[in-house]
Image (cartoon, rainbow, N blue to C red; front, side, top):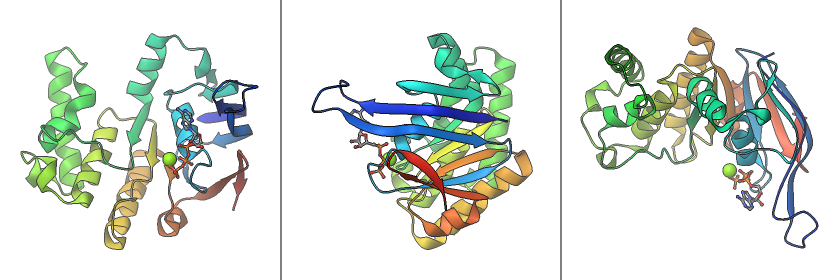
Length: 227
Ligand SMILES: Nc1ncnc2c1ncn2[C@@H]1O[C@H](COP(=O)(O)OP(=O)(O)OP(=O)(O)O)[C@@H](O)[C@H]1O
Ligand SMILES: [Mg+2]
């Protein structure tokens, strides 16, 4: 088992206050290594909240988030940083590329913490291989501002993949794309899933994209239901 969430409760605001907003309610989830999963749910249902818990960007009020059998909610800040950097790749709804950096520089951002020359050379090599694979190597020295949404989104996937994560968490990766580019993104994610054994957890409003994943779940009233 790669990931298992056990009886997660998560809300925002102070418990007992009128403003308290319960979001996830006794939610449990199991994900095997190499699986691909789509998560659907209406706006505000807690999809991003769920990805943030898995990615170690936020902590549950109650429950455990086990990664390869270890509860990450008990990690120290240093351990959680390491977990995020080594195991997790994040793709956001709007690619969040830095406008002042070239595509190649953007892709290499997660590797900047590497201090030795050999690691940096390896990362540069991996960036090249991945960028070629998704067809954006020719734009390596271009700024994101002059590229299309699909090209930027592919760069965001490469950036998420640069440290060879175990899980790719994607939050509406096709939210800003037309249907041709949704297809390209689905092909890319599934290719990484098949060839690299990358586990996928993809939040989407796109039925097209969801259909391509191995399993589709929906968040309803704070819980996940198979659909
Ligand atoms: N940091 C926060 N502080 C307070 N409330 C929050 C916070 N983050 C999320 N919420 C609230 O929690 C609920 C779930 O938010 P979340 O972002 O997980 O929804 P979502 O399913 O990703 O929605 P969308 O499809 O619109 O992206 C929403 O009502 C939101 O307003
Ligand atoms: Mg969201």
